[in-house]
Image (tube, rainbow, N blue to C red; front, side, top):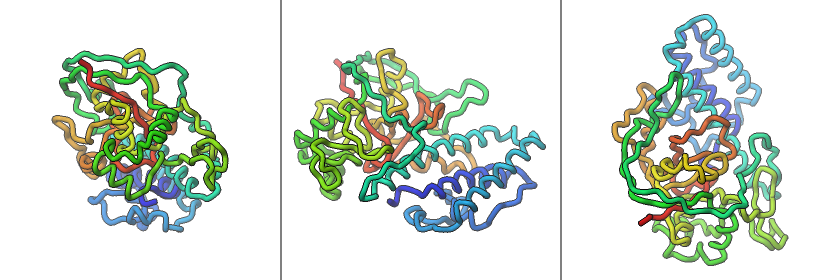
Length: 372
């Protein structure tokens, strides 16, 4: 798939980041591992030269895995030696922290990209991904509630108040916004609820869909979320819907959060449910409420907010200026985190983003409404 990358590429790219962004500009004694790797493992940094086109990363059969791991060992050794022998790294602690969080992002992408690859196999095998980082979405047996919030002025974004605290540039600066009164569901939309949407003809009802979303339905022929397999089908001769995941094909669990939806599907379901998606600011405002559940660690949650810069936003300087800011068009914000997000990586203010058609990621939704 054009959006996914081989695991070897993820391993090489996260190594390339430390070599190219940290070591080469700041450690005078560093010896570059391979000039060819600058081309192979650059992702989208125009200022750092040409690169292998993203849709063609899967065609790269060399370097071998052993060469990539040797590359990682080389860069890791250089980082350790430099940090032990010099205090120069102290001036770029924020840059090193960015490299660590960048690698955590790719740890999750490795899971989702591998899952998509295995889903293309005709036998839908178990992926054998490490179950210690993939327990599956959190399920709840309680009835969801509508949590109400009055209108008012509130603060959003990350303030970076403590030493060594980290946040991406797109989470800053902290600023005030007015929120009209709203209510938001305490829980995520479940697979059972989405199954009701399917059975009610949700994918055939043009009135529920955004224009671009309806075009996507007709172009792809989608009739269910990604990885859902209908009953009595060639891949699933059983009488129940099944869902493909890290453990292979499993029976659909009604009270488990629905996942692998794109923005169009999430918005259409919200229309069908006589509700809407929350804005990213409503989601952040509701984050600390005692009755809000499944805010993190289950699925990333689509919001109705376009991915835009905050007032006063300033991109980082140097090559990492390209890290977030240049993608602030044509994308939607997602909040929370998923079961594959590395522990400690997510924050209340974290702004994930994807284009509306994307659904190979672990993405779901919760509902919101205007409150009067």
